[in-house]
Length: 354
Ligand SMILES: Cc1ncc(COP(=O)(O)O)c(C=O)c1O
Image (tube, rainbow, N blue to C red; front, top):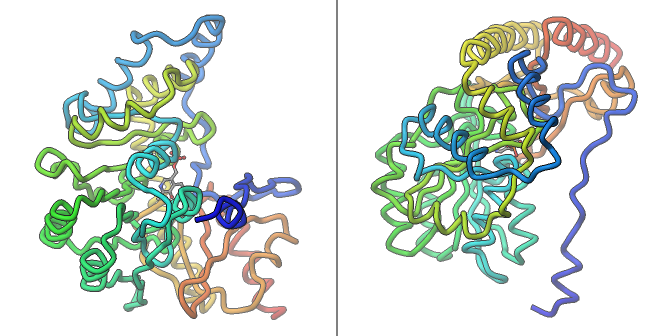
């Protein structure tokens, strides 16, 4: 592809503005700050921030993540957010002109890195079935056979619907077997694992073409410090490591280690978010909105009226809207109880005034 055509497709990905927003429910963050033990660890890191991080700063984090995920440390690769691990996966296998297979609606960085690497996206249909969104698994398998993609990305649970879209282990194994024969990398994104309790980490030993993405940005309340990790076969981990920058910020590393150690805090955060999520869904239903079952820290629903995102923004509440085929859905992160009540009240007003 001529470089000019390639550059034309690129757009900068800049963070959204939070200016004037009082209730922040648009980026699936934890509404609670990290615990005191994490803040103390960050202060300790700052005191020696004249020094580059050493191996002794990184390896305990890898060990703690591995122990948490139930794998050996050599199965873990750490990145600046799960985002960086996704970026390196694309860099490793995707070349200009390649196909990348993704659900037709998924975490925005997948189509972004497909574009950055000059790949074309083959989208797999997501259909509404009752209170779930379902991925057409048969179509996914056919596209993998037909298109010979270099990468398949699946976020499970899916962002922005909140649905579990991998039907089960048998189906995933069928995909991995097919993908392995065709040298396709399967990136399975478990960013919301703490909320879904669904994981396929156990398959990474047998399938060296499987990369699992995890993050400390959601349940662990560390979105601003950018710590994520990949879990994969050691051979794949070594390849990804070879593309990683040598240093990750010390405050992030120290914070990660402390956050993983304070498992009780995460458990409480998840418990409250799950209970608030179900409260929020009930209230949205009472407002006559169609909502979807969620295995994440957000709720998605049909907006009922046009320009709902803008109308809520005028009331200083940030949510995010998406298009899936002919449908429009809105995604609202679960906030603190007060945030969720404010969202429900604002929605009631907006819907009543049409
Ligand atoms: C499915 C999915 N993967 C990855 C991420 C990004 O995580 P991180 O903050 O670790 O880059 C998100 C964030 O919203 C996400 O929804």
